[in-house]
Figure 1 (cartoon, helix red, strand yellow):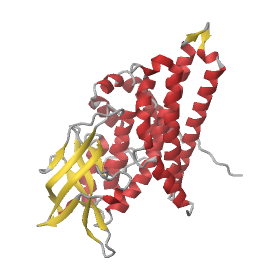
Figure 2 (figure 1 turned 135 degrees about the vertical axis):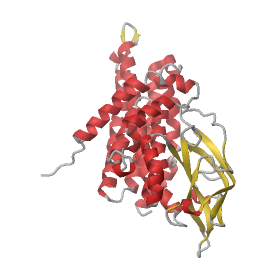
Figure 3 (figure 1 turned 135 degrees about the horizontal axis):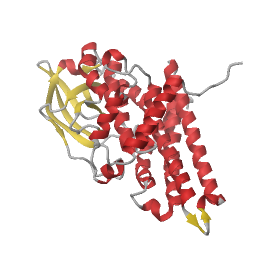
Length: 385
């Protein structure tokens, strides 16, 4: 009798362990210093490239590792157990920066951009959100008009990850390229290489969390790129980006699960060491129950994103499962971060302890790549409501 089996293959388990060791040995000892300096960890990113993490889900013919999306999500979860800034750098570079080119690009676009994106020599960014339109992505105001064989782009994008590093090579942006027969905006995707005249990258935001990742506002003032930089079909940009976001929600769910599990890891360690009233606080049932609940949440979140990834890899519809995984994992990450901080007491409020960083990093998970409210809308819609 067949049974559900979520045990990882030997290949996936080996990858998971390799990334876990990298996170523990390479990332953990230094990331707090990068975080406090609001500094992008170029050396860590370089080593991630050498490990092949940026090429995990892409074919070898484009410089990838020949793996799958599950492999990418496993790597993201293990990194997030230690630090979310590093994890979101990988997630955004692969699922948002490189994946649109792989999914929708021409053969020439793939061969031009993917090898360097897969090696980590170059980062790509995903320009969808605008200052006046977050959840309402269809309210795009950035425009692009064809003029003498070039797209002339004008507009602004906000909160764009990996968009202003020294190794950022391109940003794929959505722009209104016309009006359809039904009167709706025609939205298309266009590749804009870094350094293109008229393309300005603002200084880094001052953020609550994810301080060792790069997030900026972008502006386009008569920015001109070749007509061949259109990504996919004209007028299909919005639909393309929605597909990319469906996939990306699984990756964010894995990241949130990693943060939630990292809170468990740190709380167990602290509860064994911290003495109160003559014994380790882990001997008290109040602390035991908190940590048991935290572990239960992380375990359940992992099952949710595994299920979404499984359906995606089978080629089955997975929109609802991705939304459920993203919604649940992001909300329990916030809960686990709060509980871990409480267990640590005053030390949980000190930045030298990882849980303080996790607490600061958790909230954005309920906002980025679709707010919790948007996930609930998607789930209800999939139920026919």
